[in-house]
Length: 115
Image 1 (tube, rainbow, N blue to C red):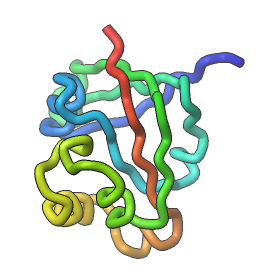
Image 2: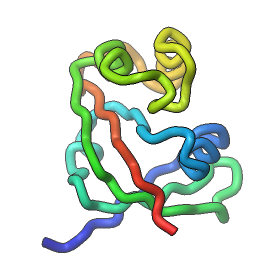
Image 3: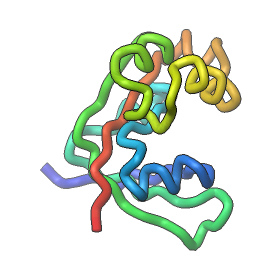
Image 4: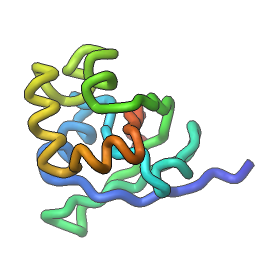
């Protein structure tokens, strides 16, 4: 099966955390675009603040949940780049609405940064 390269943008902090390895899982709404992701695919991440900065990561696991609360409580918050589940929830709702969460569910994308 051919390996797919997906494209996503990240804000500065998660971009740096994933690139450095301190954040292992990126969280998103499990919308139509994310439902096309497969383990083994690559994602090319582009910095929203500096579009010249990019890196690739391999998808090693997809963690599908009904909502962010269930996802964040399933693993230590450090895996998601945080220190506390409540802070992670506050942060993610700046980007996604409860309506989107209810409609689509959520996905945690466990990543392995490629050289």
